[in-house]
Length: 479
Image 1 (tube, rainbow, N blue to C red):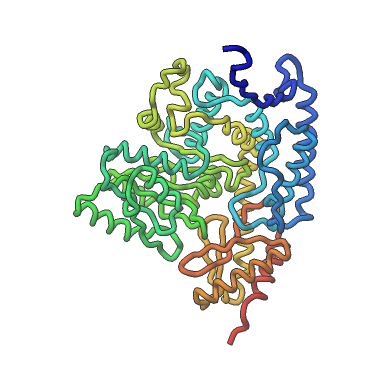
Image 2 (cartoon, rainbow, N blue to C red):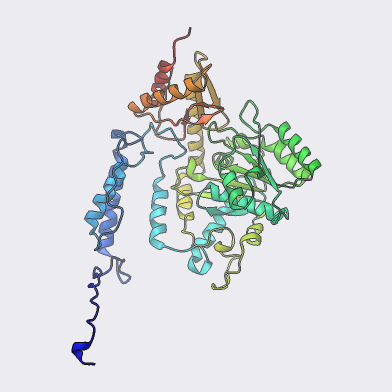
């Protein structure tokens, strides 16, 4: 067949030409372009943080630049301009009126820790990939476990959020109870326990009915009589109990379950006790405040989230255990493609996550920047703000106040039904936002409340006093 008889060749579009050189840092010398980019980004961030008072905690407008990459990579100036748009629409935790959620402003050292973590890009999957950071992680987890009262030899593993810490704890509890193949096992907790427990049981392949929620007492803690009675019934029925989960800091009112009697009951019956201390376990780090979570150290496992009060950047959660050897029993796979660990076990063998960034850096740097005195000062301030606001709102007895031992306070007008509470909470929240005071609006006990989280160190007495004035002004006159 001649050339004229051949079918024409398909024409391919020209390949996109990559930027030259690719935007990776120079490994042979300090990269001037990267240094300039970081300096400009840092200036942009500090300008945003330093102008927080000029903006509301909750931005009125969320602007989204293009979400997809262009045909060719953008220069740093364009990237920073797009980044500024997102920053302008971001939640503003640095504002003293940011009182809605468990999201305090971050510590300077923790921000730096996040930056260095990204630049090092070490992988805590295996010790060969993160030799110094793996040792640091084990050491800091052991110190934290013992600092909150767990016995010598205690330790743990960081996790990306309290939900994952709770999941790993329940998987470990199931393993230790020998119930890995039992679909009838149950978990007991209070009706105010965190929603992550239901998610954990779903992931574990258990039905929704496996989570048995029990009533709370007048203080918001788990009613110990109800727990004792339910355990007796389950024992009579032959239903296996996987674990009891106590809460040290409920999400709406910051209540703490009666940890000591719960621990005593679990010990006598040989049941694993996990404490979800995502909110409150940090109080055990202070001699002055550890009584607020008395009995915490009697748990088999504890979730602790420094991100919720101590200013550690997200995410920062830890699962701490009296006997951390159980982690490798459950999650160890041998990692046959890695060299053996030099110090016990690889990070990927001690938890559900394999590849993990060095989140321990931001926690380590943040805690060292605070020091023990700084940790105590953060806790002191949070408790004092809650006490002050409670005192301001309690005058006149026209509000139902719901709080606990920690730094959260929820409230609703006394005598309001569900419909009245819904209307009042929505309208009052908007009035507060108009004056740059942001509270959340949880549904609790069948009625919407307003909730203040008093962990923001920038919040001063004058902010709380103005908040109380607006709340009192929102109440209908007494008939």
